[in-house]
Amino acid sequence: MESVASPNLDLKWSLTLRVMAIALVCFLVAASLALLASYRDVRQANETVADIVVGQLQVQLFLIDTKIDVSARFPDWDAVGALVQGAGSAYNT
Image (cartoon, rainbow, N blue to C red; front, side):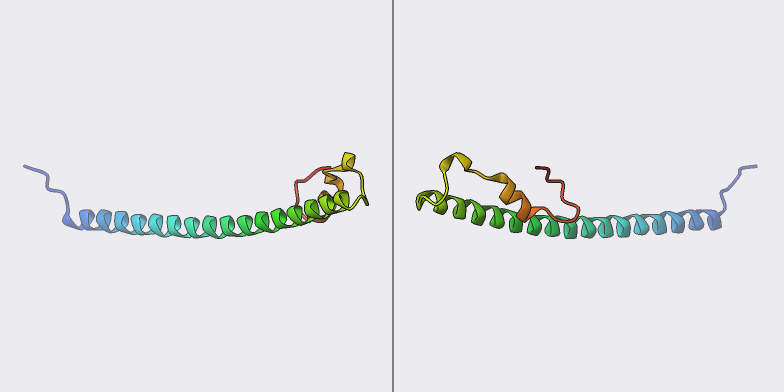
């Protein structure tokens, strides 16, 4: 006698595979969205820090040009670091 696979078992296996595939796709979409949001936040924070650094360095150059400060102190990273260092910042002076 030949053994015939139960069609009921094949349907259950097929449904299980489909559910797992949909769950995997949903997980990958959610992870991608979370990474994209983190990327945008970090990029915005970096742009803010860069703007602060540019402004501080421009002030230092202005002070040197007007002879209020000496050029030996340029760039004064301590002043820049004090402005950009925040909670969770990895910047060390």
